[in-house]
Image (cartoon, rainbow, N blue to C red; front, side):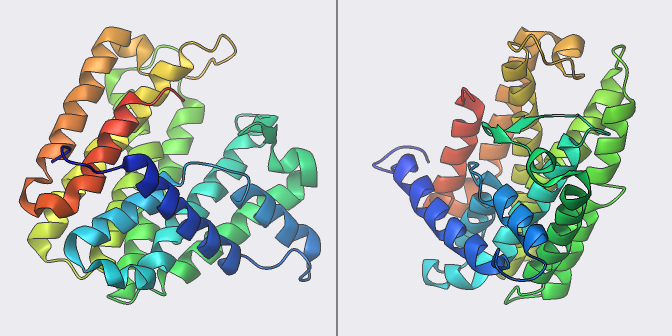
Length: 283
């Protein structure tokens, strides 16, 4: 599936351009009142990032719908990125992780103040649901997927577990954090793209396996990369598995993800390539 002449870097660059354009269009102009809030929203969303989640949503949709219909699916795809950015803004706050930088730039609260950062995150969450509701197919199902990933049984629940975790993290606690803080949003991105692409239930089931597996693998690799940072004191899988076992688990999850794509043929080549890229990334 990964053979042939598929150029992942070109594919990612093209998708990133499409996603950036859609994000800029969806966000309120920084000159629109209240200007401080809208400037904070644009600052956080447009400050870089790989755009993996919306890219995965588009790639999943392409498995089940003609390429020419992709533009209609861009709104639910960027909904995931808007919601992801809201979680990052709130994660960075002094009452949470207390981070001063994000992607090499001052965090939102450092530039705009804590109150504006909180409100910018709130506004981005609302905008995410507005975009999800623009799905051309089954908008109510797409919105529900985002809601399930965002709430107390999803990202917020994972964040709560993360901030209350101790250094003596159990395997069960670790897996809960990984599943809900990280994997749930990857899972939602895949399912939202697949549903918006008018997939069958069997197709949705297979791609859901892919989404869950790569989401967990992504967080394990994050933990491995963060283990080289002496200033990072967050709980991670390294303290539970050790690096060698963590790498094995990430590799196994990636293989499970790629295996779930076997029924989609060449249309799944981008998803399979992205899964391998996520496993082998160095940052």
